[in-house]
Image (tube, rainbow, N blue to C red):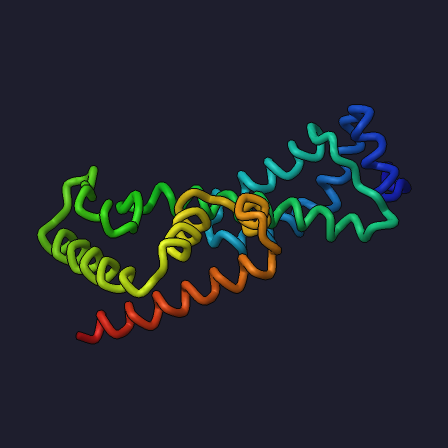
Length: 189
């Protein structure tokens, strides 16, 4: 197996050859782990991502095409996508605020018992966000909500809004700039 190219090994993986997957794992597990570890900054999550990457190689119907680029790049793209999914999931789990939309801020309930300090900090953040959100349009709020809290990718949002990817990226960037500027002002006040 060591004499086979990555492309040849992937063809064998498609035929469910365990030894081919094992060889790819031996070649690339350290690289995938390093990339995932840097992306998520969590050792256990990085290990889970490595496992998911190689499970995906085993189960996916999509194929690697050597004429489109290096196998290593294709593999790191899979790793990046899984790391991004993990980060989005983590953000949703860690978020105490289900939605930052102003009308929904009043319904915010923390499921954990919070110390008085945490409660005050959270209330202060809610007030800052509510104040900063008034500077955003309804479309900007919706875009932020979908991207950060519902886990949509930029390309999914472009398809959803029937707009070019560059337009969606630009709108998200503008919304973040406005939010950052007004959160900074609110935080100073």
